[in-house]
Every structure is written in structure tokens, then in C-alpha cells.
Amino acid sequence: MNEPVIRRALISVSDKTGLVDFARFLASRGVELLSTGGSAKALRDAGLAVVEVSDHTGFPEMLDGRVKTLHPKVHGGILGIRGNPQHEAAMAAHGIDPIDLVVVNLYPFEATVAKGAAFEHCIENIDIGGPALIRAAAKNHQDVVVVVDASDYQIVTEAMTAGNGTTPLDLRRRLAAIAYARTGAYDAAISNWFAGQLGDAFPRRIAVGAELKQSLRYGENPHQAAALYVTGATRPGVATARQLQGKELSFNNINDTDAAFELVAEFDQPAVAIIKHANPCGVAVGESMADAYAKALTCDPVSAFGGIVALNRPLDGPTAEEIAQLFTEVVIAPAADDAALAAFARKKNLRLLVTGGLPDPTEKAMTLRSISGGYLLQARDSGRVALADLKVVTKRQPTAEELEDLLFAFRVCKHVKSNAIVYAKRGITVGIGAGQMSRVDSSRIAAWKSREASEKAGLKEPATIGSVVASDAFFPFADGLLAAAEAGATAVIQPGGSMRDAEVIAAADEAGLAMVLTGMRHFRH
Image (cartoon, rainbow, N blue to C red):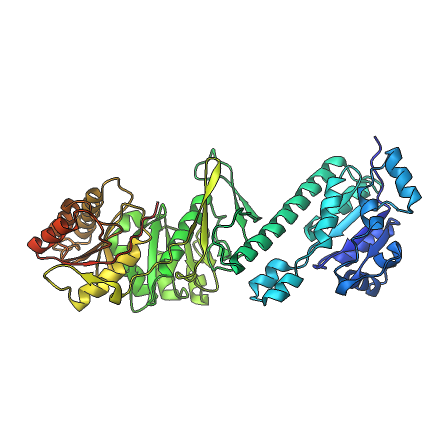
């Protein structure tokens, strides 16, 4: 079968990047250009001959431009099957000329929403004719080429040059797939925005739309394929960051860096988190970023090797010099100064990401996780506990210093995989137990790791002596609390709510501990 020659193109684009050069190429091959509005003006201003769609259809644009391409002479020209006698007869009877190439990108609905535009302005940026044209052309890809991304102008140009005005079927099919994905993502953005406007957290159907940002070398393991997709959301983080230097990010880098940056965003003071396998191995607040980094590193310097470092302030030269002393996979911060860039210049493989801001830990957003045959949708854990929320349940009241550390430890605990135990002292994590099936095991592991780090640092006693301890969920038995007391903790923060709360409180009193309940748990699976 002979491939169809492109003789007539319909062009209607919001993003005019590369449009004039592409249209010039089409005109040079004798392709008639149909266009509307701003696209037609841009082409005329470039000296190209353009036929207005209203002249082509004999029907004027209506309703403030809402109706212009929704016409049988347009859609018939796109959908008519070449070589089909009935279709060709109908087209001839109604004066419908074939349209062989459809170049359409859509009203910038996503960008309009991202700017915080008013409801009615967002509504006016919902494209109707564009998606209809795209879907029609994609359906009839046997005869019609559809282009929805300016980045694809070049491959169409090359194909038409090689094919003397034709394109191969496999290219038309690939472009049709891209086109349907674009309209699907567009509809997803609209439906999700509408659900948000209505306050409908769990609508009858959810649609997921995302754009490929980069293919990854592999996933969690070398035998797993992977890629990074972005949704267009403006939340600062690894997905929206600029990479200033270093190797390509891996799947695990991205996952761990996201966890690290979300953690440091929890704190108002200068804070640093060092992450390994999505769990913190050291977190601290300090007077400066260098101070916070040095303190965070003391918690578990062995695990910090090859980890991720996140900062909630711009990266400066002194901090970068300290980080550069240890092998680090990724550093992420809101910004980095020239001295920091110079310090990292000799670390060619170290990935440095800047985000331009911090994510809001209190933002009411949703998270989506895939399971076999479906998805789990839930609200992001934006819960925070303040001093006024704490309920002292022991005979001993916590000191002011203990209260400050208890709040710090509980905030870190929120970002540790369950079962989670965090020991902290003076705004520094001194022991972290993560992801154990038993809470008492998490307590013991955190204490053991702290003892080991303390010995290597030459301390006279484990750093957990005189610390506070946080648990992400209640103690089902007193054993986990007693393990913390044995490690030297003097105060405890936990959600409470166990059937054995009274038993746990009694054990805390007997051990001379102060304990506060939050009423809020932070499971993280």
C-alpha cells in the first residue's frame, strides 16, 4: 500500500515553539496550511500563506472562539478513510477536502491552574476543539499524521524528507499513541482539579496523568526497568529540582532524596538529614548548616557513607567542604552558593540538586501507591504535634529541654519506617531503629547502633544516656519502653491508645521516666 502524501495541514497551537520553521518546511513541500487565531497570525507574520479555518468551512468562528474547528469539513477531512469508496463519495458530495496532518497543542490548562488562576479563568483554559482534533487524527492514523509536541516536529520533517512527502505507518502509530496519552493526561489534570475544587478527596474515578522526565538506567535492581514521570505539580522536591552536577540519578537516588528533603522541610531551624535506603541515619538542627551536618553525622557515620544529604537552607561553602569529606551520593538543598559549587567541583560524580524552595509539610495533598490490580490513595501525612497537644501521663513532668527534644524526635519519627524508634538529645538524633517487626527490637537496635557510634567517637558513655525517645505508635507492652529506659532515655513521647496504656505508664513511673502522649501516630510503611 502506498503511504499517503501530506498535502494539507491543520495547525492550531498554544505553544508556538518551533512552529514557524516547521510550517516553512511544510510550505516548501507544497503543503496547504489551514490555521486559526494566533497560530494563523504567527504564520502570516512570518510571510507564509495561510487559509483561515473559517474560510475553509464557510462558517465563522463563534462564541468567543469556543466554536471554530468543530465542523464537518474539518472533522470529515480528518476522519475520512482514504481509499474507502463510501467515505470518498460522501466527502466529494459535501465538498470535504482531506486533511493529512494535524498539528495541535492544547490550551495551557495545567499552567493556568499552577499559577493559581480564578475558577472561571481555569474553565476558559479547558480546550474542547483541540482534544477533538487530536483524537480524530489519532484514530485515523492510517491516513493522518498527528503532532502534539513541538519536540516531534523534527522527526516528521525527517520522515517527510526521506519519504518525499510521506511518512511511515509505524511513525504515525507512535505519534497517535503520544497524542492519546496527551489528551488522557489533559483530561486527568482537569478531572483532578475539579475534584479538588469540589473538595472531593475520593472521587468516583481517579485519573493519573504524568509526563516522562527521564528514563533511568534501571529500577531498584539492575533487572528492573524504570523511568521518572512528573505530574506538573509545583511542590519543590527531587522531581522539580535542577541537577547542577554529577551522574544521572538512579531510581533509588530519587526515592531516597525525596524522603530526605521531605524530612528536613519539617524544621524551622537550620536542619540536615542524612538518609540511607529511605530511612534517616542522622538528623540534627543547628546554628548553621555546617553545625547541623556535623551533628547529624555523629548519629551513624558508618551508615552515612554513600548516603543522601538534605538541607533546608541554601548550601554554603563551609558545609559543602564538610560533606565532601565523605562519599555521598546526592545532596539536595533549596540553593547552593558559588563556594559550595567550587567545593563540589572535584567530586564529579556527586549529584547536586537545587529546588528553589522547600515543600510545605502541612500541605493537604494526596499520595498514590500501586498494588496488584489497583491503587491505594491517601492524604499525605501532614499531621504535626505541637507543645499544646502533649498530654503528660506520668508522675514526673518533662523538663523544658526534654520537651523540645521530644517534639524534635517525634517529628523525625514520622519519617522513619515502622516500627520506628528515635532517640534524640539537644536537637540531634543519637539512635534510630527502623522497620522492625517488633517495637522492642527497634528500641534495642537503635540503642545498639548508638553505643557503637559512641565508642567509635571516643565518648565515655553511649549518647543515649540522658536522651529522650520517640515511638511512631503506641507501646503494646512495657518491654519496648523498658528497653529505652535501659538505654538511658529519661523521657518518652508516643501516641498512646494501647489497651495496656496503664501498664506502660506504670512502668514509666517505676523507671522514673517522664512520658507524654500525642494522640497521633505516624506509621510509615
